[in-house]
Image 1 (cartoon, rainbow, N blue to C red):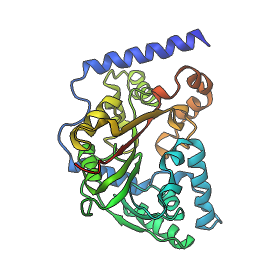
Image 2: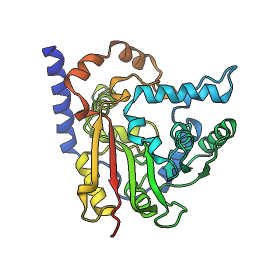
Image 3: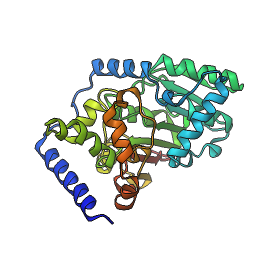
Length: 311
């Protein structure tokens, strides 16, 4: 173990924690429809994981099969958490679709799957992918905060890395719980704080630029679409207690994971392809991060809850 590296990580952690205590507000209190419009504009231009696709002289099936494989390899907890094979003949709703890696996996596994995305870009791409593979699924443009489905309609509600982007995450959770059948399962991945990647973003856009503000405010302003949030495990438990499980927290499983973001092994989007990011990727101490940190301070946090049979 490298003592100097360990000391540096601890100093960054302590500084970030002190700065957080100075801030009274981490996220805006009121939902912001203007923010939602900006979120939509961001993902219309850059659907999640589209940067992995190399469609030059390749058909859509093979081009995106490579994308799917890479996504599942770089974050191997994803497919295991989804448990696609166990969803055969079940009604599944996925909210936030990216390039459709998970939705097509549900469809291939024999699930009766429906997908909702805020953007036409994702919906149009996924319809092309489904047609090319001869798969069937209902895919539509929609809003996680206002789902167009009746109560108690789905066996599984699934959303991987999406609800932290919508302005009113708690409202989206209420909608998820509403459309789940009694006995149905909620499966989410939300960004986690404190985490290695959150502090890395904070260092680059905060102290290194002379800005000593809350680390989560930096994430909110600079990570992916505007308004991105990262939650503590306690905050997720509190949201679930208020909006979902109504006094049955024993049905909830929350697990952080050290992810490709924490290890900088993911493909950088255009937003992060400057020379600074290239240098950081080259010198980044991945082995040390794995050794010292582990899953406890990972950026991905899975959340699973079962809706009681009687509420």
